[in-house]
Amino acid sequence: MLPATKKNLAALSSVVWSALLTALKLIVGLATGSLGIMSEALHSLLDLLAALGTLFAVRLSEKPADQDHPYGHGKIESLMALAETLLLLATAVWVIREASIRLTSNDPSALHLDLSPWAFIIIIISLVVDINRSAMLRRIAKETKSPALEADAAHFSSDILSSAAVLVGISAAALADSVSADSPLYWILHRADVFSSLIVALIILRICVVLGSKAVNNLMDKTDPVLHEHIEQLMNERMSAYPLRHLRFRTVGDRTYIEMTVGMPKELHIDTAHEVADAIESLVATHIPGAETIVHMQPETMIPNSPQLIVRQIALAHRMGVHSLRLIRADQGTVIFTDLELPEGATLETWDLPIQAFRAEVRRHLGAEEVYVHIEPDMRTLPEFMLPVPEDWNTRIKCAMEKLGAPTPSRIALYTQGKRRICFICIPPSPKLSVTQSHEQLTLLSTQLSSILPPVAHLVVVFE
Image 1 (cartoon, rainbow, N blue to C red):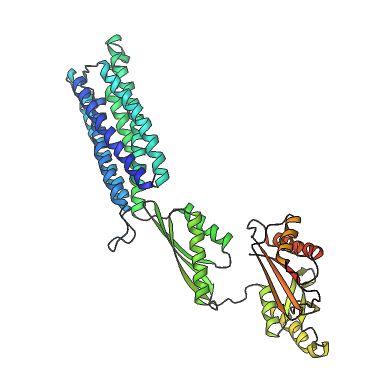
Image 2 (cartoon, rainbow, N blue to C red):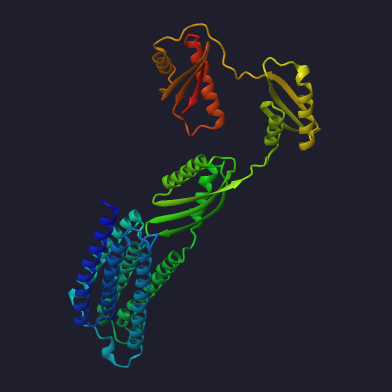
């Protein structure tokens, strides 16, 4: 069943039950003269008005966004919740005023009750209905994120307590005649119905504070600190390469509209930046159902902010590659060690000056005690292979992967340059693995495959 249909049916059933309970309580209240039951009847009448308002608000909130309401019509539910709060407040004021009049009146008839079994029956019926109705509304409000249904659920939860208080009140009042009129207990029991109505009023006032503050906070777009922290944590864990600079959001009905400013390298092509923004929006939508996110891309000059980045930038400036970079904070000072990649056929005489310049520049920028380098040939050229590539090459790779208990390759790509060959075996990524674990897994698979398959190409296993 669609969320909109669930909300409408829940609101409609609430209207029907409110109308029935209002009629029954009003008849019994007028017949018995019980202020507790009369206050419950008035409470149920306001419940009926609130339920009708909720039904209207729920149906209006489902209207799609338009030019006049770009964020949709969901705020009407918060407005209705606020209106319901004001109705409850009026009920509480009336009950307190009527109770004060009866308690201070010198007329004995002001406290007279004409109780009958119907008074007890209607309150018990009301309790059963409100327990079931409150549970149903709370469940659907949680499923559909409806403030109006949530207000109704909280409202009818208070009805359960108030009905229980009235039941205790009229039960105590019924016992008053069995106690001596001179007894202090008689004075309490004789006024128990009025006291129960005051308890009802206090319960209503408490609900007013809770519902009213929540409705006002929603209308004023008060920030939810839990959601704010959740989004920040999500970006830090899953999109740490793109720092979150600014975040704001608002909740309208069951939808959350998020606006965020994200730092991106200014060197990125606009198409790439757009793809990154789409990925961020999809990530947020996955973890926060009903969220619509707009990402503002803030171009930033990615100035090296760590020793490792500074070393790599200096190496690139001298036309050298680096890997296995280590920065050691020794007692004698900072020591840096790295592998320098130089052209395969170059002589050290040719590269001696750039190497010394690299070491001096790193020491100057980082204040290092010493910079040690290990020279390695740049092995980025493809290796040569003499054996021809079998026609069933892809099938052999898949069988070998199955034999190793590895994932089935999603793609196998072979690239050639004369006798130079390289073959990429793409497998599904393992998001839960760390970078180190991923590297170890891919390297092990590449090595194991090379030992099983004939030497016809350089094998590299990568994540798709």
